[in-house]
Length: 253
Length: 200
Image (cartoon, rainbow over the protein chains, first blue to last red):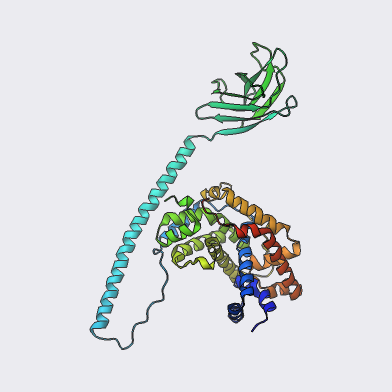
């Protein structure tokens, strides 16, 4: 019997299928009688089977899925591959004719099933493609939501927030946290900044005792394309953004 | 049946039963890993795509022959992908060819528009597996990772590694043993748990 140390050294090559037929047979023979090496092989296999997940990821082209499924489904239905039976020797006369007839009938049936299957496959693939195109079209119709982190400036380094803009429905939701109390005689106001640099007031932000606040509403029609969002402290009745910026977000899609 | 939520074993059983949607779900789950592996081994996209196609065609045809005793479905399936890629590599191997490594990026620019497969694969479980296993491989000492790369990604036996690198065979075996030991220590939690992508 092969020594245990030598077999252990061969387990990697054995699992990866690198051994010659003779070497593999030596390992197999040893494994039959050695529980320790069987366990070592299982451990080696479990480690090596995870290795593909450690390879640097790369994205396959999206068309590969359709091509792969077409190729797979264009083949025969999944079955266990069985070795063909060898014909019996000395078989002759009516029995052979019956077998030949049965073979032709089977072939015709397979052909019919294949043709029907092909037609069905065509329909199935067309249906899938239409559904995919419909989904793509829907995706194209509806632009993605813009979700942006709202960061505190030096005026409020602990303040944070989240802004969500729905470009389709032109709506905005703004959540802010940890804003300090505004300076005496001031209140916080949110502003939308357009790509041209123009700013439009979204209104005054009311805060709770923790400095948290929320506002939702429609995007002002005067801002066609949004670029950013600011929260400033302003005196009452201000129509322009003049005060120091406490929170800022980039909303460029 | 919600195929996306089915376990790997359930998908394989459904594929054996001829349910094409199960094959599609399995493709979404593993095609990215299979493609990355084949691309890393072969170094060109066209050949990697062939390997992925061959793998899933093979899964479709042979799902009925899968036996759980032989390992998890992903082991079986990615084993098919690796074997195909290594076979192709051996067929066309020429001296001086670039060597594949685990961690370096793909030799060709990745598809800028990720397909549905990648989107599915971004699910947390795959990311976690890639993060943990990739990290474990990168933390191996260079000389240990090298022998593992030559064995796994180049299809070389330990003797061939010794011949190619000039490192004594005994040293190659020691490095291999140490690499596997370290990986086992790091990956044991994954190996004990259900290291599959069920329900991704």
